[in-house]
Amino acid sequence: RFTHYPNYATLTINLPEGVNAEKFVSQLVFSNIKSVMPGIVQKNSIVFHHVPRNLQVQLVGLGEKNNKLVSFFENITVSDAQYTVAKLEETTPAVFRQRIEGFD
Image (cartoon, rainbow, N blue to C red; front, side, top):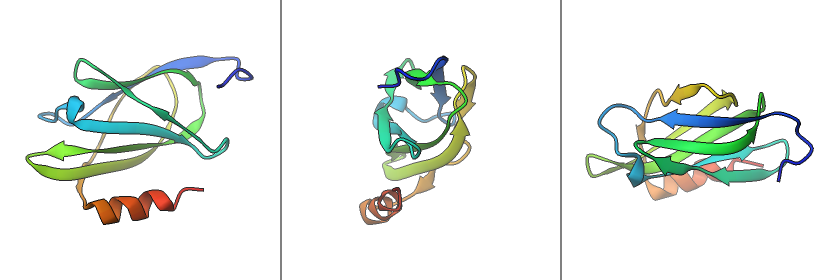
């Protein structure tokens, strides 16, 4: 998918303490190429392999914490560093859908 990019990273996302990554669906949104990439759960992290380094992307996640639907939307720069999600926000399916419909 990213054959014209010369340098790749493995991006590792850590969720806040006490949150089970297996209960989340996470994706990277690439606005510049109108594409998304799903994350893979490894241990209790979400990992994105073979991502072009230094791209600005939107990290989007939806999952469950304490029997409540929560989400996160964060702008990040792709690197090999581990990134910790700062805040999970309680949401509803309608509110989440409205947020993602705002992407081009």
